[in-house]
Amino acid sequence: MIEIKRSAEDYLEMILMLTQKKGYARSIDVAAELNVTKPSVSHAVKRLRENGYLKMDADNALILTENGREIATRIYQRHQVLCSFLIDLGVDPEVAREDACKMEHDISDETFAAICRHAEQARPV
Image (cartoon, rainbow, N blue to C red; front, side, top):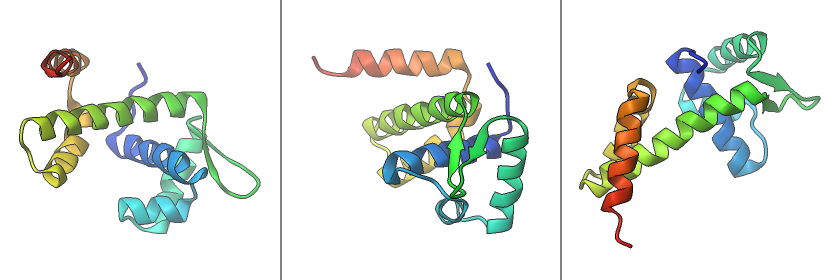
């Protein structure tokens, strides 16, 4: 599995989410959604492009490469599962979203798989 920093995962995840929602992702949208400055996004985009996770098209839209999409999808899936799991436990949805954002990066594959199994067993048929 590819190991990258948490902030890079956040950028890739947000680019995936924006692309799914709007059909494209631009640096300005990423900055607004992550509540960071445009220069911070520019620096991150430069690093992500240099490392092969991201490309830009002629209109400066951010495009995930295969490696970038793999990481973004993994993190986004973790976020969704963890958020739902926490809400099912009775955690306030806003708190669950915030906690899922923290947990999605650090939880081991083993623990995540166990949570997935538990959540699947807990669902009514």
